[in-house]
Image (cartoon, rainbow, N blue to C red; front, side):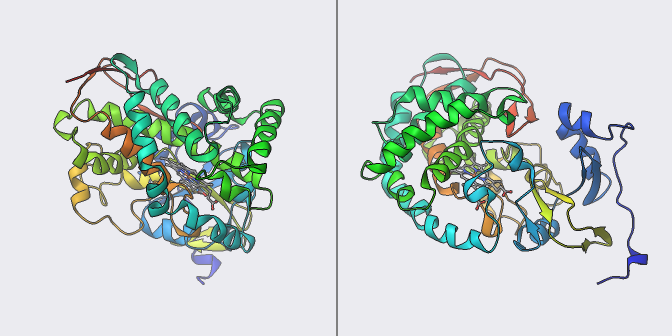
Length: 381
Ligand code: HEM
């Protein structure tokens, strides 16, 4: 360990006292991150509490490879009642056993065998014709896919819709406590878990302690992340018709997750004093990692703001592509999400897709979100 005297102060983007960076974090989080990233691979922010932000393979490995040193309790996910329970709020050592119980069912091969046909059928059936808003369409389709995979056709759609709706609203919507919605959702999930539909993920959750809560959190974590990714994918696809073929769908999804990682910022809390690249990190400090900055680093990804799925013909940089995070806490639903996304994108193959909205930008909210409607036009063959 380096002597304290050799440690240097963290660079920080300019902020206004007394609020520091909080108001920019609220209104222009991506701009603030980009400004910080220009100062170096780690930088400080004064939010409602002090935070250290980093990006790039070394930082990602340092933070995400050490479950005991960087904990989830007290991190940003705890701010939303949608994510503040279950596996997301479980730290080492209990985390490992819980993931071991869930991982096999969520393995890519397993979910593909179970749901590939179901998702392809839903995507074909609900494919829009004419003008449509890709955000609304994506949220609707992903909700249907999640219902089919998690709970099956007996689950009331009104309950699922109402539970997920706040995740589609601007801040502070997704952060507000929703006791009635949560109670209603849990009541219906409990009924499903008492007699799960064969082949649904409910069969797994029925075997877990606190399975109702665990399932509620998994459904919430699955929804807007996947839906927003799909909206961005269709937006990009509309500008590159030559990519609109089934064999390019996987690369289109991978590149969308690079440029628009819906988990644009992740967080931990340092469990003890440590240091990185000559900067002290005291115990209790909020520690942020950013898939968005990592994926837009020109050192790792040449021409990072161009949508080029061809880049995935080459191997990915280790710890440099982390849309689903990395390490033991990597996204439980990565296989399920990519299957939903590939199925949905494939359903557009062959049709003509045009942009109606001329410009959109990503906005860093709870998840990365298009900054307005994403109007597209689909013209069938
Ligand atoms: C494109 C879609 C998705 C993206 C980009 C995404 C991204 C992420 C990221 C970055 C994390 C790590 C958060 C952290 O601890 O720092 C995570 C965790 C998690 N995700 Fe996803 N996710 C997606 C879809 C899904 C789906 C479909 C599910 C369904 C099960 C899911 C369930 C979870 C759960 C349960 C965790 C917590 C894992 C743990 O703490 O061990 N996600 N996701």
